[in-house]
Length: 367
Image (cartoon, helix red, strand yellow):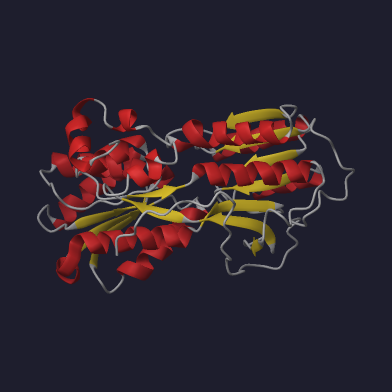
């Protein structure tokens, strides 16, 4: 069922996540290790995973930095680095943050398992780690992301809606994310919970590094294997890959089949209004970023997280980590005004530039 847009609550909305994994200590108690409370002169490290996906540099970084400055009367020092999808580079960046004696680290892991030793090193140095967007392994102290299985379910439901009564007789291709990203496994699980038994999955891929180029190559292989007239739709786990998939479909002369996405990238929103991509998943980066900043500042100051994080999650190496999970919305051409424009992610002029204006006018976007 297509979801109507809803207003995103100003406060953090937490959704409980079932505990799983081992019972090793999380290092996730809500105080900052018993250290003396600090003022606003804190040092925050921010490590993001890659720059191919537009969201990290366009939204996450500036939003997090802005909120940290607000919470510390502009006195906090923020040290930033992007790993460019290189897990080894990110481990080196953690080492640099430790050497620079940051008080807290916000970490979006390239490889959630490979980063475990680095998280442990930070903890050993007395640095609290906030896992951002991806649940990193190791003794993290807090975590914020979206309900990732719900993302997959939302995508799967949208694809079934697009296929309509033909779904049970249709064949689709599934393009999942990178196996190094624990979120990808959750998106995949959520999607399968909706799609299995309702549609035939002709080919399925785990896409290395979430790369649009790799998704393009995988889609070309799927078209060759299945035949261009035998594919009724594509589950794509994010918008970047959707772009590569749609390029492959066009090259093969395949048009008018639904393709899903995630992240509400500008290029994806424009593809949606042109009927090239069926939907994306809109996630409130401002809300996620603000929660991460609030957690980080509280931990750096030795304050309790109880007022911020009402729920707890567990990974394979940490249990009962204070957490906030932010809800998501299915983005289609019908609710662009009520989501990305209303929340200030994009202006109508940005979306409706050039060749997109006539499509926007027909949809009443910006009007």
